[in-house]
Image (cartoon, rainbow, N blue to C red; front, side):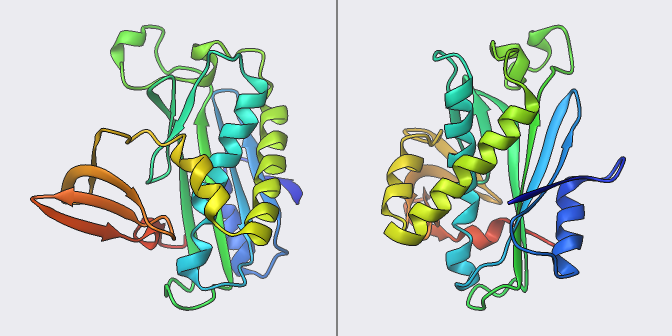
Length: 226
């Protein structure tokens, strides 16, 4: 992994996608450590079809949880959502996103980028203004330095990549399933809304709506490459 600050005012995710399109080395981490929001993106060069490579999205989420778990006070809990949402003590405070090229699920992509945004400072001094939203420093994590958190995320993500390469998805499934926010809750995706039943081997969402079980692949979360 190698770090590169984003250009002034640039979105690290957009810049990482552009660098990947230009043929940069895998492992590039583009970041912006703004005082109010942390944004970063990692460039991957998968060697498996996109449907399998999309595992990098939940893998990066687990890496972030492990990183924050090692740095934050023990009472702080981070949960993940299937669509890349991040929750701190039950409230939304961040989001993961993903893009790849080409976007054909059966093709091996030339590159895949996973980006993260984490709100550091609350937008309002009154928590009641947005009760379902929070910020890192609003949840007792003011001692967590942004550079340290970024480095820890990259480090824990790399550990999980190595483990996934050697052991497959089973360990990641166990770790992710213990962090998922949807357990015993309703979940919505697009026009579908229903009961969360879990995920399949490739982390496709199993959703029961109107007495029918739907399988939604992770590739549904792909953004168009900027």
